[in-house]
Length: 219
Length: 219
Image 1 (cartoon, rainbow over the protein chains, first blue to last red):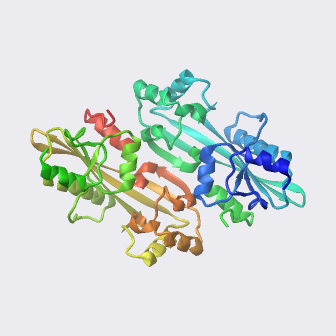
Image 2: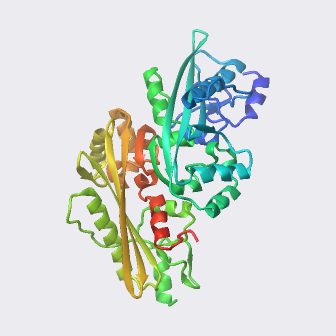
Image 3: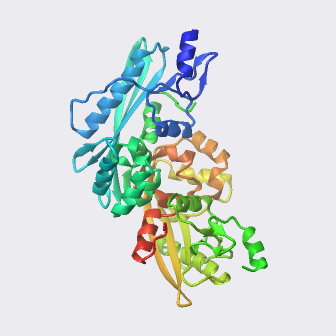
């Protein structure tokens, strides 16, 4: 590996990277999300983090189409901007929260987070995550894109409890202004679907889809 | 507090205990489960762990009745064997896994764990947790007992993957031979109900029920 590349990679937060031999196992996570990284690590996957940079664009307001498009664009950005070996996998993912048909991204500010959580408490909303696995095969990138939806129902939560949660700062980098694995998760009454999908990566589905592609992510 | 009591308590794993003034907030978790302890801590509850000792007995094979009975017995054992102040809350909980109507407890040995997981993979099972909150009021213990059920569906998992999981030792202290928050959780396709209920304590429901009793567990 050239010195220039070595310096570049060392500036990123990289898991399972062996600089003597380049990127190990050729699995790239095209996401800077620490939660997606933790989930892949839980599964025993050895991978490298190369976050997508640049602006994604969506041409739909249908939630599952939107997350599929966004995950594909993230994976493609990383695949195109690095020189990657034959057989490399690039995994892109995008998560959105949908309440009464409206897509909710990350909050603009604390007030926006409070407003969102006042809507979500006592009600059911949907969390969509789209995932794209790109595999480099005969110099081409072959995509496998899929999505999962999980319904999340909250117990009633008081404005004071919501204010206290927003003041922790936890909502600010999260679609829908909460993290289910954090302290707002204590108000969850019920979910229908994959819990990890709400965190940001439908891990079981990802392992299942890659098995179907003949790939053992954990091996 | 007498020296004898101080020595006794110091031998237990205690959270939020202030020996100068006795047990803080008067909330007792009657369970040695580290997972239940972690969930209560996540909710910001200050409590003391006093695990129930002695044999519980069930007089039913109906899952929800069984976990209600067991949680009540655990809470009562602790309430009766300690001298606790007026207003004290004792929380007991019990979790079982049910597959095709059959109650599955903790595995007897590694082979039993493998057999159980071979049954559960590719299928849907139920996780029941019963909870009893006892409140000391006018020298009497007033019970509030409830239960939650969560359906858990696994993707197909190979015998080799199951063997590797059992060899980690993780299944041995867990009802149904797996922990959803551990590495077997990566095979979950879908759940219907409360995720924390599968870990061992329906935290949202517990907070909701105690609010109804006029108690703020987190305060």
